[in-house]
Length: 376
Image (cartoon, rainbow, N blue to C red; front, side, top):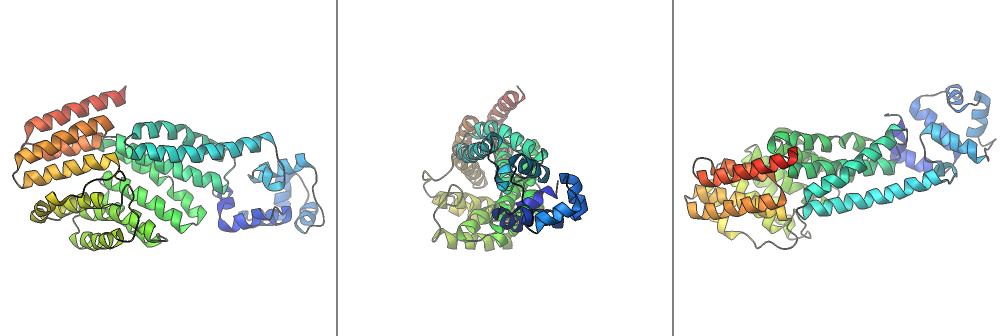
């Protein structure tokens, strides 16, 4: 499989762009360590004929022969000038796949992660089947990596904590593809999404490692702004106050220069700061800041409102404000049920614990109902 993925590298793209059969044959032999005799055995030609093709002393005008060569090399026929219905279907699949990934991401950020999962499962299966049949074009691999990441992140929203490792494994499956694409910006994107799923699965040390790598590879301010909030959450999870403060300072500085997104905005950063302060043993600072929450805008994803309510409920409890904690956590339960967010219900159960048994039991009942629905 790895040798087929050589067609996805930047150097391969330069060679394929020439549509030069001789150059393509030479490249294929080079990356696979084949002699002209060995390549001839694969394509059904002798060594002499392969040499003539590579040196442009012979051409193959016959379209059936070109289609057969393309198939043998794991290429789409159009690369060698062949246009047929199968290739048209491939182009349509790519266009459909791009739309599916975009719409699934919109659905997830709008609080409909279950619908995103349902859309991405069949797309991932179809793309993986194409690669298994010997077609590992760069555009297919890139789309597959994005679809796997989208599926993993959507699963990370709808699965309970004990199953979040599944979400992390799906995002991890995109990392192998990034090594072949050799695109630092795209690698940064995959690393940050994978790192966040690792954090949610309680693999926080590995999460920090991946997220620091994502920040280092980020090609611009927008990419750094996408990774830094996630790194701050992971730094808080490992109780590294120094790293947490350092990352939050950079988040604050970027907030003035970067267009807000569903993750990178004042509302989300406020929640991250509160949770990080609690995790790094600074509850009094969190209590002082709890009432300064910015008003959420339409850029804030619906699940962030649930996340923030749970965190605020925790802060209220630390301040011995049972009424405020109850209001926040009960509101969070209703929203978590509406958006089907079992992980947030589990956070509520832990937060309420023995201090608020009624709220804890209400969240536990809601979680049981969601589990039964998922089992069905």
